[in-house]
Length: 376
Image 1: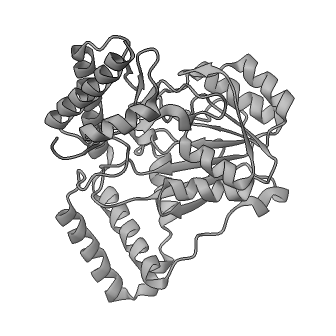
Image 2 (image 1 turned 90 degrees about the horizontal axis):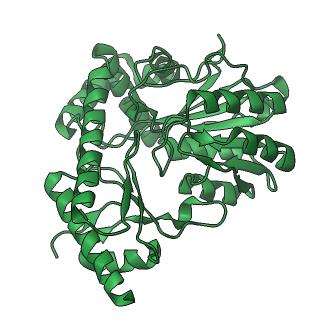
């Protein structure tokens, strides 16, 4: 069978910035902190420096609805940023409008908070504006959760028309936006997502894409447009042990120094090229496998590929069989707030080399063909 091929997600062992190089940068940061005292490092306003990089356009699409950049909070990763936003914003019984399909992690967090996720019909270009109007009136949601630049799992990007309609409708209805833009750095186009629109309160999630810096995770949360009465919703930073807090600060300072010395644009373009190339190879190999009914929807950006299985097959039982073949992936059922499309799979091939992608598709094809043969 060979080694297990894990396309469930996660983080690769190596990044574009290798572990040895990254540790050297961290060491230089730690030495600088020791010379001036650890308290100085704790006072470094890393959140505002990151905000400046984001809003300069160097880190992909960004959110700046006004001259007021809002409150920034750095977190361990994007999941932590989303958890803090959901905890601060949502109360039991609140409705949250979501895309179909949408992030499994977000759905799990909403459920834990007691909120009710409600799907709004649409396409990979975004929610249908008429359906959104109806849902805003019918459910009176506390928030609308979307990913404008790169959705999970489908890898879709909202059209300018639908993005503008969303922002205007939510502002008019007084409904908060919860924008998960953690994969925005994998997008080609740099733009102000709020340009040309009157916007209401928003919580914007960002994060480093996997594979950028070896062993490094970082998320951020930006709160904008909150009225004084809503200031209580802004979350406090997570509590860590002093040694972990210092390590996190050293990591962030090293990363910001790296980006300030050398623009992140080049390394991000390299990462995008790798993602595009590996998604294209996956699509090519699936097409070459000639499995009737197996469709790979190549994403516009992001880490994931969204597959449609042949009629009659479901992702969850297929995963059990694929595990015996040495392949792991995410069944699609967890990405729906309403009735799930059980024939969907999410694959994350961007950390696999050419050989592993070819072998992974071979194992997937063999598993599907075995299932089809049983049902004939």
